[in-house]
Length: 166
Length: 174
Image (cartoon, rainbow over all chains, first blue to last red):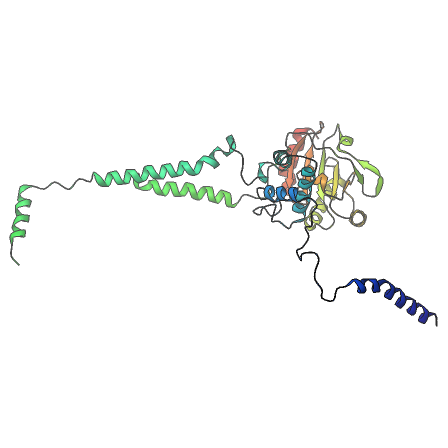
C-alpha cells in the first residue's frame, strides 16, 4: 500500500516537473545552440598560447613526443602547471624559464645556441662544407687529368690504323 | 693512406653511433646538481598533522627517493632500501609519495616495511615538477648545506649503489 503511494507520488512529481518542459518543446526540434562542442577550457587565448608553446616542448615521459600531444599523466600535470602560470600573467619566456630551471634544456625541442650546443647547431653545416670541398677537389682532379705521354712511333701507328680500309 | 681515409672516417662515425646506442636516454642531466634543493612543505603519510620540509634535514646528508605504491620498479628497489636502512649504511632516506593515494602508501609501507625517515605526500605532483621528476623511482642526494649533489633515474641496485652512490656519499662525508 505504501509502495503504491510512493509510486504515485513519484509519478505526479515527474509529470509536474516534465510538463512545463514538454509544453515549451517546439513541435519540430530546432536546436537553439549551434551543435558545436563547447570548449573544455575557460580561456581560449591562454589555451591557444598553451598549445603553441607546448608544441615546442618535449614530454619528459615519452621523450620524442611533444608536450602538446602526450597523453601521459605527467604531461597533463605539466600542461596544467603552464596553464596556471599563464593565468597568473607569466609570459611565454617566463614559462620556458620555469620549465628549463627544473627539467633543463632537455625539455626544449629547439635547444639554445650556447657553447655545449655549438657543434649541434653548426655541425651539419661544417659537414656540408667538408662535403663541398671534397666534391670540388674530386672535380678538379678530373679536369686536370693528364693523358699518358705518346711517342711519335705510337702516333704513326695510330695514323696508319686510321687510314686502313676495312 | 689516402684510400683508407673514407674507411677511417666511417669507423669514427660508427664509433659515435655505437656510443649513442648504448646511452640511456632516461639519464637526463638534472639542472639542480650543485644548486639548492627546491623547498616544499607537505603533510606526511601516516600523520596528516605533521609536515615535512627539506629544511628539516639541514645539517645532514640525506636522500630523497621519489616513489609510488603502484610503481613496480620501486618495489624492486624497496628491498635494497630496506637493507640499507636496516644496516644503517645509508644516510636518512625521505620517500616522496608521488601522485598516489595516501592510504595505499601507508598500507604498503605497513605491509612491506618502511625504509624512510619521513614520507611526504605529493598528491598533486606539483612538488615532483618542482624537483624535475620525470617518473618513479628517482633518487637525489642532498648535502649538509641543502645542495643537490646527485640524481639517479630508475631503480637503484647494488651495483649502482656501490659505484654511483657510495663514492659520492664518501665525498660528502656521510
